[in-house]
Length: 240
Image 1 (cartoon, helix red, strand yellow):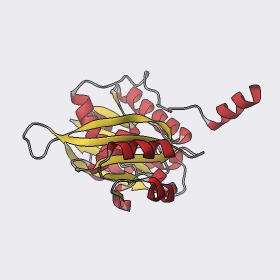
Image 2 (cartoon, rainbow, N blue to C red):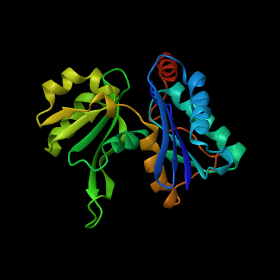
Image 3 (cartoon, helix red, strand yellow):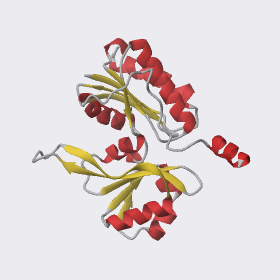
Image 4 (tube, rainbow, N blue to C red):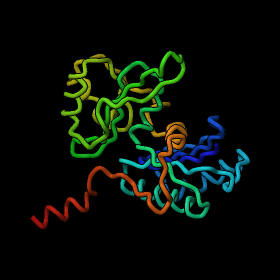
């Protein structure tokens, strides 16, 4: 099985190629360029380096949201274009779950946080549970589904769970002082190498979803925003 994965849900642009469960390449940048400038050139270079032809691909995986409205639209358009041209299915991977997969197999509670402004974050609360007696296979469990939530309410939920937690994502940096002041359980912050979106994690989760038949047609795919854009909110406020 051959999968190409894309993530443009935040400032990081990331692409990856996976063949039969093996990560053959990953290319990520965290620099102030728009994803429309970087995503396709990065993918093209990665395909050349890994000698993978687009026609050989079985599915296109995309980080489906939540996240940056512009970034998600660019990623969705890129994935849809590839899917339509290649006549291949889309695997729409929830961004927060893909972030949690950076810590696949860890014992702690995992809390990805993406800054949504106005003291809100896109977040969920996850753990990994071992599958049967197998020492190296784990399944993602949701203690709280991904949502847009006030950061103070999120920390109340963390405190109620009462287990050690690791925070990651750009929101964990934005609200670091709030976390340190209000989190009553043992906690840590992810190192920079595991703190941001990675297409490799998107691909890992996409492979599992593909095997379960959790796919979409390219024409059907649309990003998951979790809330309306700032422009739409401002327009609603003016009309009330």
